[in-house]
Image 1 (tube, rainbow, N blue to C red):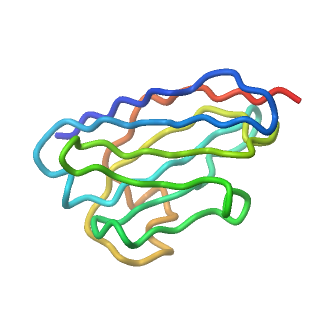
Image 2: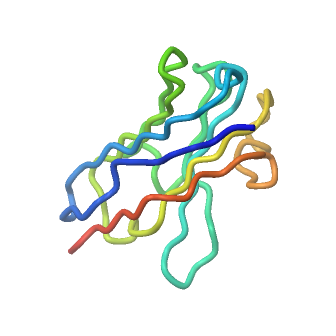
Length: 127
């Protein structure tokens, strides 16, 4: 069993930055892919970024590429999402998820590839 707890959300003006963190319990963190997804008001959940258990393997949604950076600290069992140049359309609840050992970018972007989910943290970007 893996428990995930997100933190770091908040209210920020457009152009600002936030750093989300997701702390994981259990002993399998280093062997798991980790992903960030978000749900905007009135919209479906969408993929944001993912990092494989091999931390050099990352993938991003086109809408955040060049602005967001995902990273992981296996010693701290934590995954981070650094969000820069935030836009109002980045507003939503951000969820982290823990998956398996895939190195397939398509699977990393797919919610069904993840076994565990956090409760989410709200990010609001004002214009």
